[in-house]
Length: 63
Length: 453
Image (cartoon, rainbow over all chains, first blue to last red; front, top):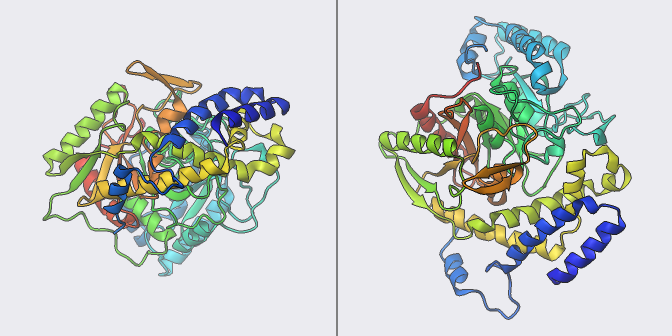
């Protein structure tokens, strides 16, 4: 779900449930979600993996 | 304050009958009676049961049935852990009326080792906080400075051990909840490798992040409890680290030391220098995705906690303290796709920690960027940046819940105002024993654990 739509519908539901006190927490969370979604480890259905991450993962293992 | 009593220093005396379990238990109960009204470290004190069990232990030992160094030793448990016949309150009114039908797995193994349970300790409600302030039983206070928090969520456990109300305690750690209070109270706290110790019979917070582990006054005590809980009591304690080779540690500076309170930085740098003077090789290492740790942690712990609490959030929301209810509610708005992104992020972070450990015996970093925070304070300013106490206290510990690597907090020199500081060592995955051996060596080098007066 796109971030903007998620934020909007979450806020509406929070207000409907009378939990406006958690709106500031939601606003903090959205910043974290934005950062999470921007991370270079995220999948891309086109099959393209960011080169930097691909190189790193090829050279790591759990011994 | 009593002299520094450890299980390690008392075990031989108990074995030979020089001191009895009954005496140790009575001393702890006297300390509880004296300090509980101020520290509020316990929710349940099992005085009569402890006296009976100690008497039985003394009879067993006298008749030649000594079970090992934990036999007859008074310990406590975080009140998130089931003990048959006792309530597991999780410091919440939500659990009112609950009585555990069976012992948690780790309680069974500890009983086999002969420990005596003196009581169950206060905590941050449902372990969902790092100050032990939000509790249906009132806040716990730090024995070093009662105007301050003991850290959390295993705050009652750490306060009880530091104050001598018990010789050790068992806590849980989902983002740092053993290591944070250990650092804030000047004791040792171990989070083993993920999955090593059973969490059956322990109220969960985040099932993929939860760990059980010991808090005690020295590394060897922590090792004894850990070994008992994984049923490895037949092994000898880990010998002091490789004498012939220098210890090699990776220092996590970038991101991890960007935001440290001045006195904590000074204390930590002194500890690093002490290690170097003792021949330890310390090289700086960094994790490329360190700044993503907090978003990954939030998108893991919040929905996992919300899932466990969903039913009672609907039926008994008023039974939660407001801050915990709000935190749990926000977790219900996290999307499945973002939880999956966080899982992918954990894989990346795990690989980066493995890489940083390669060719080294461990990683080193402070446990907490601040000393024990004053009770009631919600934000703290460090070097011009204001952040919440929750963010700051989790900042250096939560990574190893995401990756599952074993991590331990050791006490180092206190701040000039006498507040404890902790240093964190991180070991290889499934190498908790090696981490404990490394910790024994480092403890010898520091040998200046802070104790309340």
